Every structure is written in C-alpha cells, then in structure tokens.
Length: 116
Length: 109
Image 1 (cartoon, rainbow over the protein chains, first blue to last red):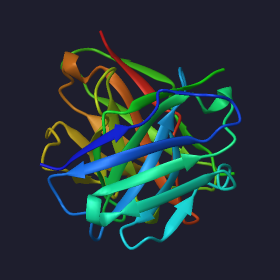
Image 2: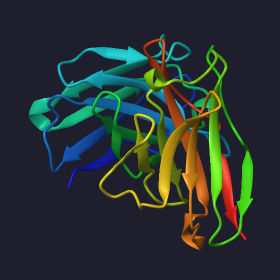
Image 3: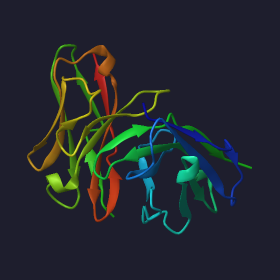
C-alpha cells in the first residue's frame, strides 16, 4: 500500500521560504508524477506543480516565479520550496502521486501558517 | 487563466441519485481533459474516485461513476449513503497544467 506523508514547519514568517518534504513508502517513485496541492482555509484545492521521477517539472503559472520542486528518489522523497510567502500562502499542503492522467494516492496534508 | 466551475452545493436524500458537474472556461470538456474526481472529508486524506473521465480505482465504490454530459465532466452517485456527505472536487488537464474546480459540498439529508 502506497503511503505519502508531508512534513515540515507549521509556521513560517512572511517573506521567508516555506519548505516541505513528502516521504513516499510502499512503492517506487519511478515512472510517476509527484505533485503538491494546497487548500487555503475555507477555499478550494489549488494545484501547485509536479515533478516527474526523472526530475522534469511543471508549475502553475501563477506560482511559477516562487516555486521549486525537487526529488530524491534514493530517499523516496520529494520537496517543495515556496519563496517570499505572505498570509495568502497559509493553507493545508498536500502531496500526491499521479501516473500521468491517473491521480491516485494523497498524503494527509499539513497545515502551514504564515505569520510573524 | 483557465477556470473550472462546479456546483457550490447540492443536497440529496439517502438512497437517491445525484450528479455533480465540472465545466471549463475553455469550452466543452472532452476526454482529453482527463477528468479526475476526488472526495474530501475533514481530517482525512483526499480520496481519488475517478480518473480519465470514467475509470474507477480498485477502492472506488460501485455507486460512483464518471462520464461526460452536455460538454461537462460528471460524477454520478447512485444509492447515496450518509457517509457520502463530503466535498467533491474535479481536476482537469489543460494546456500542460492541472486545474481544480471550486468544489461541490454534497449534503445528504
């Protein structure tokens, strides 16, 4: 059974960089796309971007200038960095796996609050 | 920017049937948008229900089905159970990016 688990600081100061890691267990990272998604309080889901296991990436255009997603298949982890955060970046952040067009497994999500 | 629209809320009686839809600002949704559907409940990991329009995961209950309907992606729940009360999101692939709909809050009353 594939499982994903997000981890990282729950509180980030404005203008700093948000950093999260997703640990994958129960399966290989090969031949899959690994995404980050977020849900601000009281709002809907927002796709942030994905990384293919080989390292190629694609980001949502509205976040592209601030986002970096990286992968370490040897450790079965992939990471999200979001720079210059503001209160609008406060959200539950999820990681998920897709096999191209088939989205499957998600993590439980982790709340990140941006506040001084 | 691509906008994906869902009904904000729907109410259905236990045992009834309800259809949720997913429209795209670019025009008619086709199979090339690879519609995916997800169920979200508070405190739980989102659960994938449908992929590529009408394909079910091994864990998807038989009462959930996906289709294309009138230029939109659709999720139909037949024989609704109280446990189906949740938020439902569609996800479309367009212009090399993924876009979520605004979500539908399904109430079972």
